Length: 135
Image (cartoon, rainbow, N blue to C red):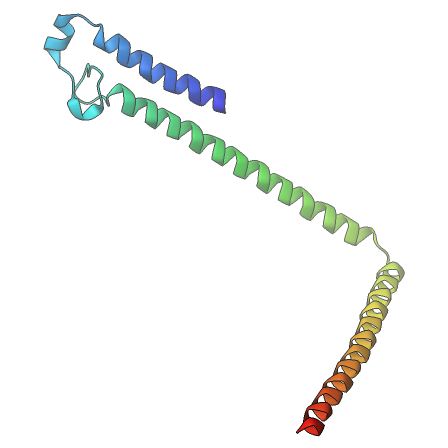
């Protein structure tokens, strides 16, 4: 992409240089538009060369963005298909065993959290008692 961008910028600057070197008869036909940042306008309806290069550059960037979105959505659809297939291929026993294993893990974590909570409550009570005894 960066090579294409530099080519577009180079083409815009070279078209400006070519337009400045044009003959005086072409300049007499339409003239140059000072708002365009230089360059010879051959037709009043045509955009000046720098603006045309910017429009072309924006069009290329928009096209690449659309292609990137298409690729990303394709990858997402492939992932969805894979997940659906893996869910279909799993049998009921494997699914139940997996759910039971996860439930046991969560239960063990709950017991550990309860023990930690009890210890913290005991420490808090000890600190409160020490604070009350000091007064």
